[in-house]
Length: 79
Image 1 (tube, rainbow, N blue to C red):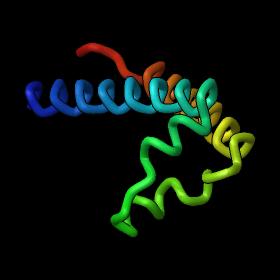
Image 2 (tube, rainbow, N blue to C red):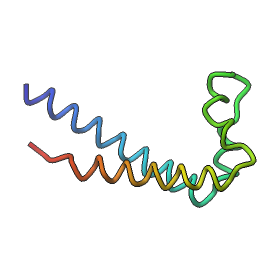
Image 3 (tube, rainbow, N blue to C red):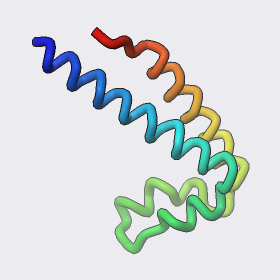
Image 4 (cartoon, rainbow, N blue to C red):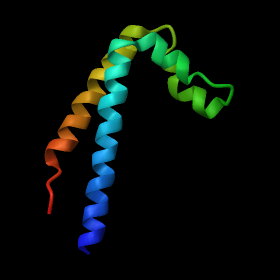
C-alpha cells in the first residue's frame, strides 16, 4: 500500500510542476506559448484555441494554474 501512496504522491507532484511551469509560461509569454501549441489536430488545437489572440485570457488562466498547482503541492506530504 505504501508504494501505491508514494506513486500517487509523486504523480501529483509532477502534475503540480507541470501546472506551475505551464502557468508561468502562459503568464509571462502568453502569445508565444499558445502559438507553440497550435495544431492541425482539432482535439489538440481545441485546447488552446480559446486563448488565441487573447493574451489577457491566457494570463488569467496562467495565474489560476499557478494557484492550483501551489494549492495541490501544499497538501502533499511525504509518508
